[in-house]
Length: 425
Image (cartoon, rainbow, N blue to C red):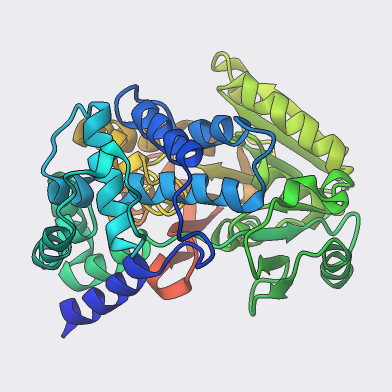
């Protein structure tokens, strides 16, 4: 019953056309897709960067053209293994192979193939038969490497993993987080409406708005004025979980480009101090630009270039956020190419990094202070097992476990996440 239900859901996704109005393939758009796939599959480039480049390729393209390019590239990246298996091609893919994969995608979408040389030998009927046959096997149906499938079963169990990986193959919704330093959720909704972007509230996510239809929100006046950031609903739970108050000294130690840092600033009403730290200075520079647009002025940026910046803060933080580096297996909907780039040894190494980060950075929390350990992974070995292990160590024994939250995409509809709140004795 379980697998059959998945098959039905899967077929709905695969056979649903991108846009009923795009039933005719346009040569320049298809060439852009093939070029993009070559860069992602053969040159190892990141899908999001490639798509950004492709969308700047032709100024005459309208939003529908750009939508076609972006969504087609992402869909083929998501289902690379399944489509390649149906097309009977192996990596590295030459351009003919990429056209065969593209033909599989188009056929499964119900799009009529034009009379181009790339499609002359496309076995349309055989493609649908192969799809039905191969889709009986989860690792092919969900298009994941064998080792990830085995790891998922081992850590989450067959049923949960089957549901989770199916959800991770769906396109993620666009979620906004209102910047309460500048506006309210209702006013933001009305402002976006005036710019022809419809949104809806999401129950139990106080700062979130979901786009009804995908749109380029970065061109809006509301974005330029710093009224919102794009941030998944699950990610928005983390700053809330840290229980910050205006006036506190808060350290965000793996701040990156600062989505959660900016959320913390708005929860603190711009009062107190947030020290945003990261090993990558380039990410902190992006945070600086975002903070200015958001009207945030209680953030101090610090690159972790040695152990000194950490030692200086020992016992000083009221609150500490460790948004730890992880496998990213909770956010495959956003980064579908990650499953092809991940390696088993990376998972083992990242777990050691997580242990190190917990040991070293937790020293910054003052007595009665709190910290949150968070990841965008769904694997217990990166999440609750790491916290349990930490609590048995000499440093961890100074902390009490308060609560944790596990978010699975197939249950929440949003990214997979984990967060644990610990309090220092």
